[in-house]
Image (cartoon, rainbow over all chains, first blue to last red; front, side):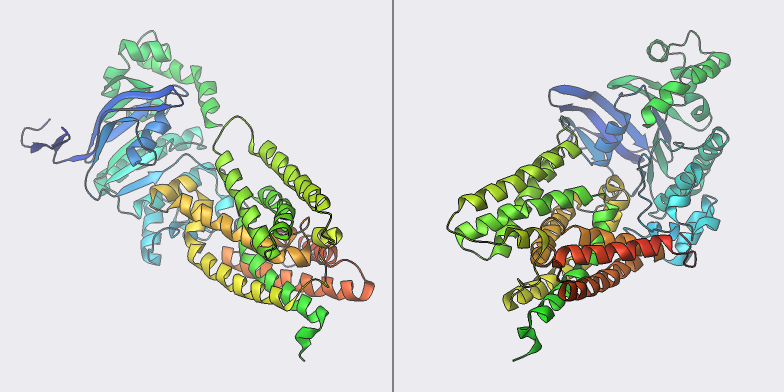
Length: 260
Length: 267
């Protein structure tokens, strides 16, 4: 932490530094007597990439929804920077091809953006050529890039990405992560994303949260892969590069399981 | 004396009014995969007829109230996880239809033409119905115009729409209300069992020629109007029940749209 950063403590007890975008304090969620998340405290700052990893049913998407305010927490509190602009990319929904929507049309579903803004945004994610294409004809990678461009239109201070490489082929995955890293630099926005694939994420993330109903461990990717809790969850015997590779293959089946 | 005194012209004007509303509204029924839900709501309309007869209120009001109640029950039932939507819809659909027939048959003092309610009756449209259809229809269209963008956003991705500030629950409830209203308005002319076909078939035909949501809505309305005109004409000249005739006309347009080798559109 830089010492020059201002820190204030507000009346709810949040220690807010000037770069804080979202902070949660000890939030929990119970539904029907079942504890889905417990005691989550986290902080996301300006221009920081935080990746949430965890096994199926760990509550990764639920955590994002709590932080976005889409569902209320059972206990604990969440601080959001006043008027925080969030660009959200949810898990890919099943698109009904009967709905005739073109790419440029979906850019304007909840906002009013000019043609130029839309084209610039699509250009940033490298899909400007698709602007008149029907959404139902996009490939997995094209769709995610279009949705990313759509999120950028809101000029976000924080990008929240749920499985951004979902439906993207292996080659496309690291390109997409690189793009997210570039966007962080060019827009100066924080990024909170959910991923299964620590190996590919490693290069472009600042911090990793390992989630399994609670935060098992967190830190820089190299540290997390050495952490006993992480190793227990993902069944790794060592943190060597080779082991990370084999982890990835071990869990290929596991990953597609969650996508359904 | 005007041409409104002629039962055929009353039916035509009523049918055209209903088709114009059914086009844009039907689009969302199809896009949101709600055709079975619409069917279930429509089947409960007979219960509304029974209720209206029993309480001696205008049948459209009885139908609207019951259909809306069933829609709300369904809406909140969707939030539980024990039964699939499909099973809940199947249960309610037939339960309400059976209950409607039972109650009507128990009310020995009323004589109604059950066939007319189930399949539509060209003779049944009164001047009063026309006021309802056009007054209600304009209200429905205006509300839908207001809801158009938020509904599109929710249909594209509900989660995203919610995150971007669309009041999802309110918009969805209001939409259910509109569907209930259009079912109540079109019941007499199309019939309870066939009412959702006017919501689904014309817009499905129009899909073939549509590149935007709005084209599909307008196309659906135009094909719906043509189906009503063709169906009612057949009904008058061949003496068939009005509902099935309109539906068959719509189906002809549907097959023509999807089978005939029209110029290939972009989509």
